Length: 99
Image (cartoon, rainbow, N blue to C red; front, side):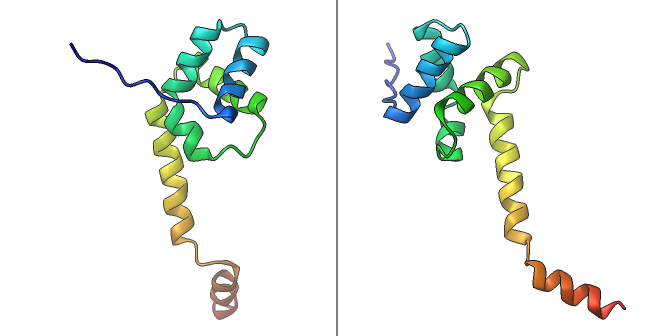
């Protein structure tokens, strides 16, 4: 029998669970399950917005059938684009050289 590892939620992540339960009609168990399902996304985004904002995003993702993997792929795509971005000075030089 395989035992599933229990994920320990941070205080911030527990705040998202509470916001889902109080503002979006989830039971406490369902809210926790949703946060655990999207835990990689929540941790990757870093907790800059308030818990209610993340609760709204997770609820919308669930309703629109956007799995965590799709969200993570989008984040990785954005990060790769940022790595390729050479900054405004590069754009200005390119513009000035073509004039």
